[in-house]
Length: 316
Ligand code: NAI
Image (cartoon, rainbow, N blue to C red; front, side):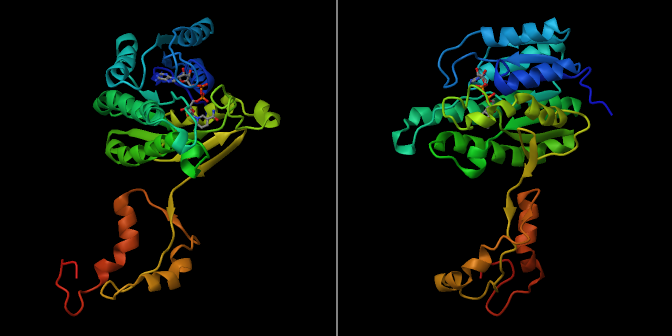
């Protein structure tokens, strides 16, 4: 089996460097027509330049592939429309959207200006929302789409000095969780990558020890992203961790919990006595949606007849 992107049109944001560059080059090498979007600023979001996106487009074209550059910022709703419009104007449609563009403004919370918080939220979270919003109607109309969003272990698990980035990256998970439910009936599948790669973005922080950096090639993440962009991928709502040859699925799960009779008076002392049972994660399960989760956690209430003093449908 060979995964091909022939006749597919892809938009990769932040494709002028690092991971995005690798995604764009790979998709084009397998036949996709690619919009290489990049604002061309510094790793902390200062300035802009056409050089980064142009270079990647030239590289793709030199290898016989098809690509056009776009220099708009994902952080502005109008500009994000232009990014998707570049795909429609040049290649007639959009099949694949990889929301990858990103910057960092690391500082501990009290030292971080709210401006730095806002900007990081704008680029990562709203940049993902704006581009997805622009692409969604086209994908809906044709009943086809693959969207790959980008989160981070910083958001999934926390990282010192990155409250802004972690908030944005976890916001993307919430966005995917609900959008996937609205998108599924149109055959638009949405997954999120949590990459690990040695790029200019994490170089200043020294997040990855020097001795393992040579193994953290962007191409190792690209294999997973390309799969998630393909017809062959039928999953939606997954979070995939990829980097340095390691691949895994990350999921938000809920413990089995415990159930009391809802007509009992539950005191903080009862919570205290049962806290270890309530927080036990043995046999924890994931849910595809909130409705799914509620069915599993509160399903027992449907089977219960109202007790003395309780009216059907009332709170107690
Ligand atoms: P990078 O700095 O090499 O590439 C990011 C690209 O996005 C740059 O070329 C930059 O010019 C572009 N960009 C920034 N703001 C933009 C905007 N407003 N509009 C359009 N383009 C913009 O960084 P890297 O490492 O390739 O990061 C790619 C994505 O992966 C980011 O979302 C990052 O947060 C995420 N990520 C990376 C990890 C890593 O280990 N490298 C770890 C976890 C997440």
